[in-house]
Length: 270
Image 1: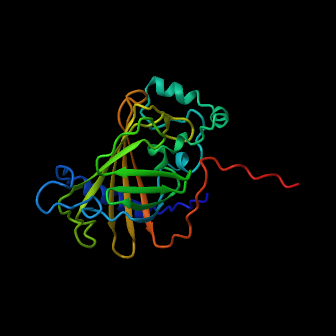
Image 2: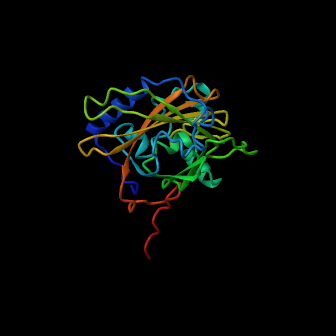
Image 3: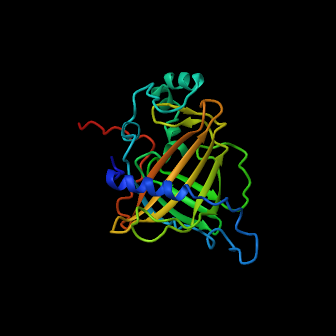
């Protein structure tokens, strides 16, 4: 697997616990950054987190759904309603391939679970751009008002905002208290896609809400990014589907490996 995701279960326990500690004491969400005296002039200058850089997936759970294509009909842990189960049971890989739909598992709720690297940078003062080497996908988070496109797309339309959190007590007593805030992203205007690469569906009526949290651990344990994804689909799900994905920041960008949604099999040698 080109993405070479990391797997360090001990660190993962600390990372998840830290994320829960931070989010459990959230203050009421702050609205846009333009109100009040001294407010930041843009989302970039008023950022509560520094997300810029390259991050690699750290896969410590759901291995069978994230590292390989699960078997058809494997919908365990996804709260599908009867229509959702029927759609998953009817998944046809050959039909997807024939109509050029192999990227349906690379929309926001599926893409974040891929073994991937993400490059995050500011495209302008109010737009954050995320590039994924998995599927060569790109997402844009709009902080300032941006018109919703007239047509739906695989990555949809994402609006973002910063919100503050109170001072935290620290991570198991290690290091100083966590400070700052989180990034909240809401994505709509999606085309239908897959929550997993075996055809577990989400519909175009889906809303995806994501929370991005980042912190640095002491003792050279690095800088971590936690993305909590909440999928709300009234067509195929009985309730919200919540996922937590972990990434670690890389200082060396040499392992970046863009690849298409489906990697063609090697040609037979003559």
